[in-house]
Image 1 (cartoon, rainbow, N blue to C red):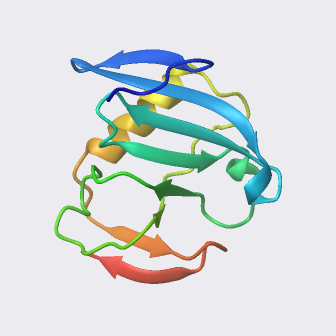
Image 2: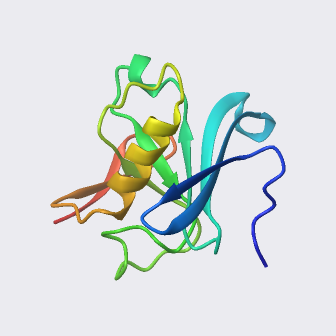
Length: 124
């Protein structure tokens, strides 16, 4: 079953279709999130908008099974991974593409964090 695309923007990238939207998340203390999901629902991530303004390094919440670097990592539930510092004041299709690219590229090092952004585990 495909993704409900109502209210979401569509992005084609390397032959795959992704849907994304920015919305206030009432379950996350009113945090504004950028949610990105692939049409097959294997790639699902959520990014808190405005993290570039914080002192701590930003992180992304990996909700789907597809994320480069976590293939052999046992996961139960969501995983939070530190990301590069992206300019996230305005969410554009270019930023969404950058986030997807980063998630799908092999990384030398992954740092998993808790919900506050404190490092929990490091993968070489």
